[in-house]
Image (cartoon, rainbow, N blue to C red; front, side, top):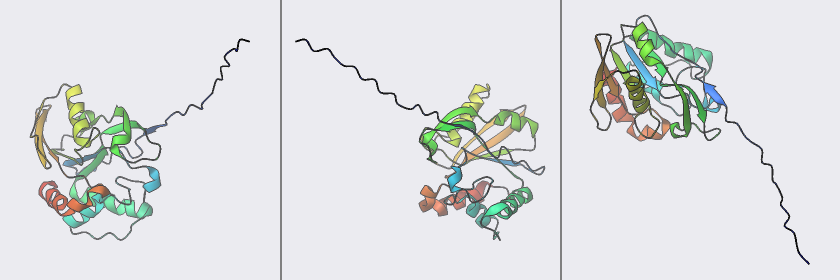
Length: 211
């Protein structure tokens, strides 16, 4: 007796990874002379407030508080966001990121390495609109997805040459945009995984943030 093969077809559900658009865009005070660029906000499950660097373990705002000898009254909610942005306005700091749209390859991961870039933030156009910006601070440099790597890719894609020292942070560079020279400084990341370098990061931010 001849046995015929039985073919069983399994139908697996297809999961479409959601495209996220940057939730905060750009914070650009009129007084801004320095633009600080990260990669993309942490997953919203980690947020303390709806604004830049909202992660519970991220120490960016701690750094700024220590640089400018500022104690925050609030730790969560809209009041916390407002007082931190007020500090940026006072010190001439603009905030944005290098990624405008992305997917998280691992659903709830907040690792930069788990981001699939869909669209970069148009920081060249942003800098053109704000000629008072003379300095760009990049807040990460390691791994395949970082503020440093993506920002300089963005310059290349826009036909803008640059000079940069290839070393460990701080990494210094510059480029010319519409006749003005803009300096770049890539500093240690304020990610919670980098807390062991807090003292070094603090010194770097003291050196390169506006006084």
